Length: 239
Image (spheres, rainbow, N blue to C red):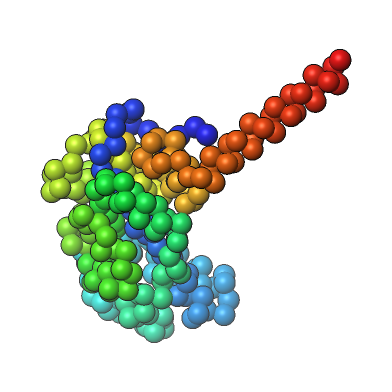
């Protein structure tokens, strides 16, 4: 299997994980499906009221309580729904990607230092740190809401590198967003686009970051054996 890790063939000496979308399943729909009976109405609300553009400043450090209060003044009919964004934020977490957490554990066990670079509100990070123990496994974490700058802005990547003394060409960034990885690559950071924990593990094994798993080795052996049998069958047929 070809590795999609890009940015160079140099050794990887540190691994940086995104949190939401890689380790945690964050989506406001996990909360708002509890509050709307109609899916279309929910989608309208999340597009027009508590919209992605409205949410962006939270990742830059703006208090969700302050922005909810301001938004309610313009949409008083949606007051309860808007305030839920701030008061019930933890219900936006749909769960943990267990496979990704196991990858984090496996990378740490190799001795490579691991870091987190996450777009997250300043006030929600302590709640998630307490709720999900694996968030304390990192050798260092940069949280956008605490920094006043968020991905994909170049400044937060340089802050990560400078704060922890990381060399870009030997650092691997794992993220589920193309735009974030494009910024990382401009700094010379190696990158891996996260699509699933299975895909990520395969790429890390191919790149030599993780040792080949027994299952992967067995799978390769079985595939080679199957190919040999197919080849023998074709030759017999031709004869």
